[in-house]
Image (cartoon, rainbow, N blue to C red; front, side, top):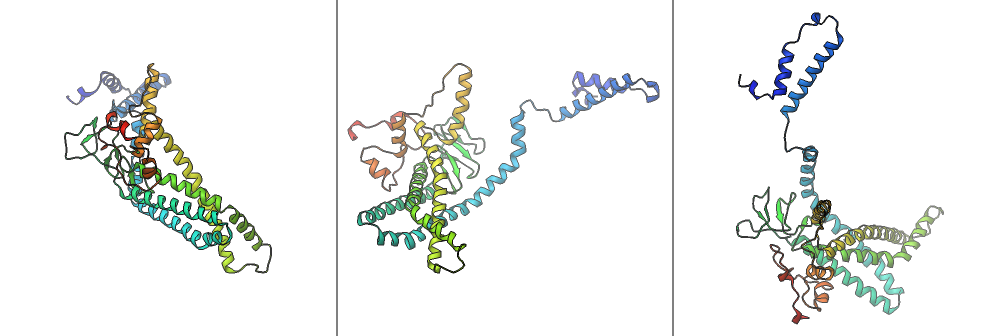
Length: 360
């Protein structure tokens, strides 16, 4: 009897009414009464089904998350393995461009260009290459920064549901690395590493200088690309071979070089501009989505959202690059530098990033 006490009053009434169902012969063909009984049975069945899976905390978002949970799991685990493949792909493509430049482009530039243009290409090209290699290596090898899980006195704003440890401000859990990351921006498969407090500058600098290098190659090799493209078209118009194997190899390498660098330049330009806008506003990629939701919520209630980590456009860039003096814009930004960022990433007090007037 205790089992039936669990039913709600509505379910109990429906069940008792269904117990008084008569045989079909007693209905005497009265279709209306038969339809009513079937509706009661259908309603009772639906009520029982809903009672089995009812959850007051469940909504449509939770339902979608539950459905896509296997997809999230698959992506997280595949990204860990494909991260190594992506890094090797970046190194392979960059190396192929360097081989073509050193084997074909530079000898042609040295032999045909004036002395001042040769000096420009040698100096700028090698400086850009040095910045790309340095920042990519540092972005891969530098830890993004993690909260110390053994210390219980670190300032925190919440508890990570997966790590079960205090989570400082601007810290988020990476499901791929399976750790909390200080000032997490995103997990980059091309680095096989998270982008966080300690390596965010390296990641952005790599994107910036790689974009500059691709644009430089595309512009510098435009005339060579046009000549190579016209030469390749002539292959199919004349039956007799007009070019040697070395010349054909040069033409195809020029087309490959220009198409690759132009495509990467277009993609990286958009990515670099997006992150530049985030840095200007004092946000990360994760915080961008959180702040938009919070701003929308406060706007509905007649309030204005203010980002607590926005110190001003110029000040945000100074803090991001770790600039303390004016000379640091040259030594810390335009030259390779492995200096640490401001603070430990645990607290975000304005006094930590306050400019020293005597240092400038």
